[in-house]
Length: 308
Image 1 (spheres, one colour):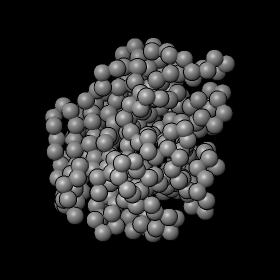
Image 2: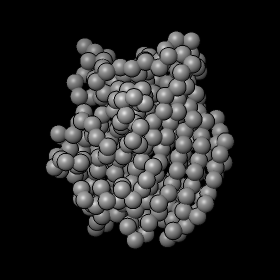
Image 3: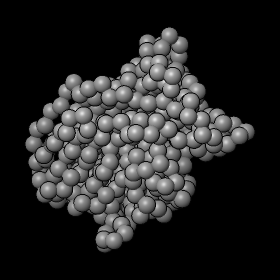
């Protein structure tokens, strides 16, 4: 199934399916409010039938924007956005701690039938203007399958510390708040996904029991308002992410369906890790965006058909 890619220079890149549905809009123009941690994000993300499966600036967390790369606690700075967690004091508005990610260009962009492969260069900048890290980001739209009612988005990061001192990655949990290990690549769902069904390999449909767990994939199914039907998102790790000999740090799921729907591939849930000066780390992730309420078997079978 072929796709069409439209680049509005200085603004965004949009991907449209052969059926005419815009399935992805990747926005790299900075949003106006620095308190929300200005950085690129993907929104709206849609299924092939046109159901929107991302939320943007919800009233409870204005800094949640579709699908975005974040770092909630990074050497005293907040690249997640919004209030900062301070142990013993709770969440505080500390605008002087909010960092940003600057889009520096797209050195590669290839479109071939049903695949978009995009490389982006970014710079992570602390609140005072010092450049802390360089990122090479990869985005790939592929496996657009009308019969299955699904398509896939691969998102990769390679981050290099450009400081003279280590970068320290953490989360609210490493700062003292229990079971709030959010950081890393984060999805915010639309409000109609609240109370949705969450499951992972070998588990029942109880999202609350998956917070802080580990596994190769996790699925989130929601039922839409206004229109009949469900959608399913599958969040999957590349094999090397779960290999303790190659990953810089182990990953855990940050997942909620109540009071709002969100999933993050947390790379520093329970413990901090350091990235030495001049060194790099890398992760690869995959999202499958599907129409319908998928179950364990359908998710597992579909992922087996998508080799890395």
